[in-house]
Image (cartoon, rainbow, N blue to C red; front, side):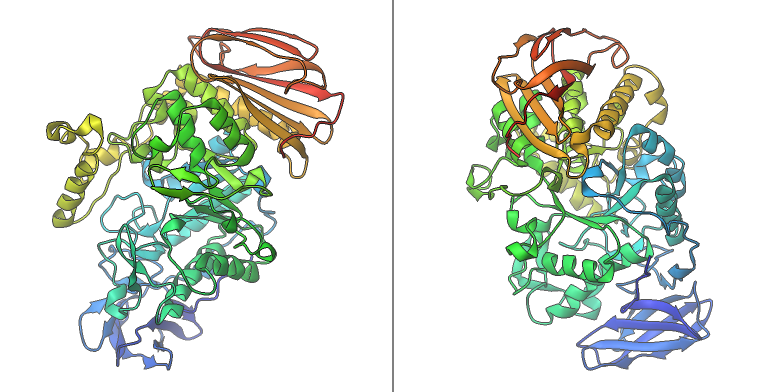
Length: 630
């Protein structure tokens, strides 16, 4: 794989180390070496506002900062490593020396992706890249095909979700060294697992962000974001700002061999210029690594088809988008949430069926929560361009106590929802520990300085004040303190519990569902002929997918209450010789409190009695070719 050729930061060259930093208003910039070689060296100002230079005899491991116009010395905003924290000196790192073994790694096709999202600091007791490597065989055995790491750019303190990152080129030192991260990706590729990285290009964190010490143009008051002034993607002097983030993407992909990027909150990237930053990002990635299968997936709540359409269609060409409508509708159905953005969702199975067919729900309808029309048509888009989940770091961690969905609903309903997720035609995403229904919450945690930390704690509790359950200030005080170290530690996964019931049963179910996903032709690239989904009644979702070879996969998922299911000739069941049972979620191997389904299948007729929520997967061969939704 072609390495990234740096244009900013510090890197080893023949005879020394090269430095390049953007400081357009500065008359003089010096690099201050702190060890092992010490000294101060002036850089040469170029016409475009960059300051460049080379220091002989310096090498990998060198610590340094920059001094602008004789003022204080600051760490490099494009630092590759911050061994003493984000306020300390930067370190020169020679990333090209790692002995990669993945030269034959083919990458991953979009249709093959099953994502496992994890936070390095809480995924294992140790919270390091090295410890995470030891869990990779488990993820492979589970049926996962791609790991998504929450942001790794270094942040203040020793614990953070990663979205307060300020040194966006530097892997967080609390997880390990850059070489440790390279080792993690190489080990994953050796097993056949892809690795994606979550990157934050919509804002920089509040503490340790030194971009303003070098240039006032990184942000603009013309655009506002939830974090203050927006990043300057389209104003005066925006080109070096765009380059700073574009180069960051190429850096992660080239030097660490990531297979793709999850782009955080792209709806907060405001760019009114002639070419949107995300469109340029896709172009740059394709140009830099044309031989690789690299996926760019946005987190975006706008439901914009422009993001996913090809450039020839006037789109930006991104490979996928997180489609939160699925999560919100499913949670409204099984848990009843109705406040905040859940106000836009009715808890109706027919709406859920539409999402399975189309990828998202809002295609131009009015949003009560946003108070505007939301979304565009998904016509012409492939199901594999949508990422679905029933848990992720936001949907768990942004709850007051970090409660997971399975903490709040009947486990039978959770098993049924899991079956819908893992056999849907879209890309499924699981959040770490979801596969065994872990007892651990995932809380919001930080480690800011005391002054900022107090504001974060107060703000965290204040933001829940508009929810009925937290109207009483005394109740809000019970919300875990993000700054408390115990809030972090209780978010770590208790791996030992997955060996006992009911956790072990849930692991078996997930493995069985992902085995079906791997084996059935409808999930292979270019093999799905059509799919359809419908609400059979107010509690039951039916999804049928047919492959070109005539095989069919049928899901009958009862998401609420007990009830009977009877197929009706001529509807979604027609044209099949006979249906055979693959599995159902209430089998004894999946739950210690199984309530077996009463199933009767004769030809294309299916009768099922559900004693509560549950899901049934069946397989059949077509006698005719159907013309379905997609």
